[in-house]
Image 1: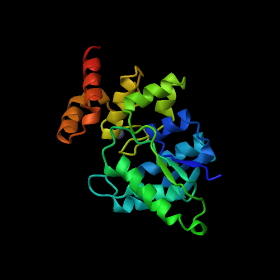
Image 2: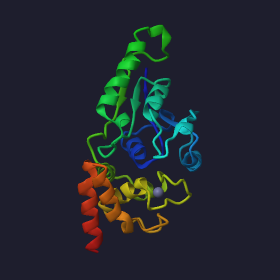
Image 3: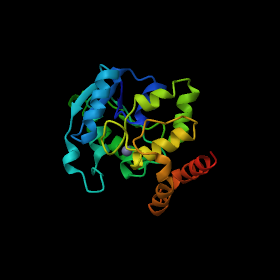
Image 4: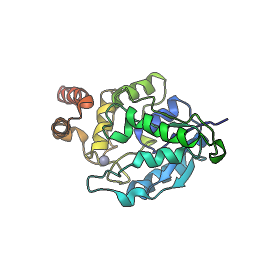
Length: 232
Ligand SMILES: [Zn+2]
């Protein structure tokens, strides 16, 4: 069996994918990239998900000032292929970097399967597939999917971690915190006490930035969230 592996970052998206697609801990791969956030993520993993496979690839040294690590998911996909033939990522519609889209998927699959035409040179055989089952959904929609499957809402706050600022408690101001807040708030999940700063104070600024950066797929969710916050 060539098996499947979930690239598990402890962020909201891969957490939901793990639950809904019932990935066992042993089918999840956590990669230490050397970032500040890794420390928090790993301590949560040790506590909550014993048996998650861990490995190291210190690519945070290549991080640009805008927080992008060039070819991050290229590295991760090739790493995932050391563990299984079906590699899963929790990418969503709102993810805009090129290494999270369908062209990326097709190209990486091409690279993997080309190499695997020499079957004695790979551990797991072709076909290699890069799977992104949530790529057509917004974060708000995947949270809804999770709740519709009767998983507990509170776990989204206590069992996933994705703040860019790497503190023990999520900052409530970074893009990652704001995207998470919008998805939770639109699904009527109470986030009181889980963010240092109240994310609702930063939504107007977040909307403006998303318009400037042409992140169109999440605009309507942010707008709806602003309307909902103001209506309370
Ligand atoms: Zn944050």
